[in-house]
Length: 206
Image: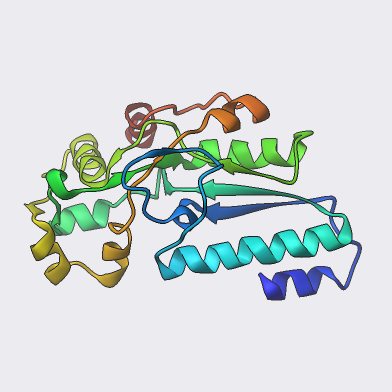
């Protein structure tokens, strides 16, 4: 972000910057429903980097009179962006009893949200981006497997997961939250093309 903003200083500043951040900036909310008013408290390096980028962007934009919009985005899925290789390999998942809440958005809906955020009269604000139907990561893997007609992966307890999962995968299991998307739908006038996982997965395999 520092390099990006430095490059922008060499020319005419843009009217507005829409930045795709991550919902990981909220940290672990212990499964609560959260709005954009939730305090940020990132626990992972990924979330900490994105929060730093958010802060740098806001400070730069405010100093130059540039509008900004931050989209806090969870897991993105869609055609070409599904864990099919992992499913074919039979890589274990965390058993549902131990799995934290996760949120997601279809890639096509995210693209439409980016355009709406750039065109909207609302600016200098943050939006939670989600289809509004959180589940858990294990449920997501199971449903993708079913849609792809692949075997469901084996499920393991958390102690076993900490032994066999990669550090990257474990980082996604540290946080649990359910994201409220009412502000996104209301202020940006968004009508999601894929308002839940069933509709989104159908688009991936039709």
